[in-house]
Image 1 (cartoon, one colour):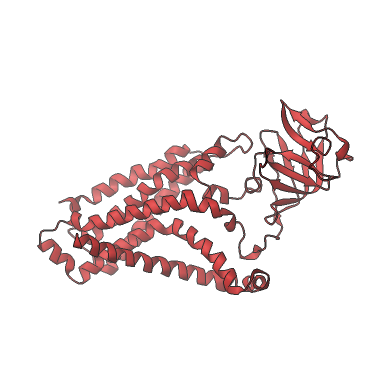
Image 2 (cartoon, rainbow, N blue to C red; image 1 turned 180 degrees about the vertical axis):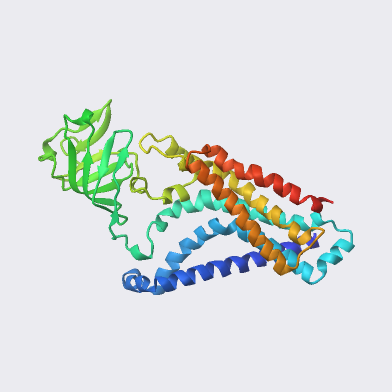
Length: 376
């Protein structure tokens, strides 16, 4: 109907304005704070504008994922407040149009944004998540980052190293401490670098160690297998290896090995579920929590919008500035509830499933109760 198209168009325009304004303000401030790093990298990357476009283009997609629910609420508030400001809302109510009928297009629009955000999380962000590894201080990926020792829980090998670099996905001055069950092969493996190599052409995934110094004479040693599964491959059994190198199989990818939070934030739900079932990683409660939070997110976004709509189309309507002010407080309370439940789950006070679903169990009934006047 004409009312639906009119309100949807107003909300779409409001969504674009709010999104571009917030993203522009955030990125401009960040760019000014890091302009020296961008200029220093511009010559080797094809120019300053290309560097800025590539860097913030990817982050614009991440910004949409982080703010889509809040901006959907803000755009609904602005669209309906615009009707109120021009007395169009009063005219619609006087014509017998119910409050629910007026609010329906904004709820449908918010549902579409929630579905788009879900598709973005599952299909787009997992493909570009490596772009978020490097910040403005590490645009070329050559900065050495501190590497904390980490176990491969399947093989019980402890990975140690001096530093990790995103360029080449490698660990410098690596030292692998082998468990006692592998003492017959060596107590540890020392090498100049360890480079992550994904599974390809029938070869397992793992780390290619170059410049092996311990044990000496690595090329002449037999590889190590446990239970019929290769653990360490040497040149004697794998002629594709270079002299002085070996290959340690592992299902712990580089971003998981260095403890990066990117793979938790930007992996798809299927990838997170696979990580839970991966015996090599030994995931904490954060990963199951994120899986459940992904399932709840669209419903929570809608609950936030329904919570805010009565401020504009309820029996006691607020002015536009009052409505925006109340919506800010509402959003703050909403986020505090979600973050508190997630924190309780992360600290093992609540189970991951309860920590993710509890905000919806609290906020959905509250939204339905608060929206009762719109149904009349």
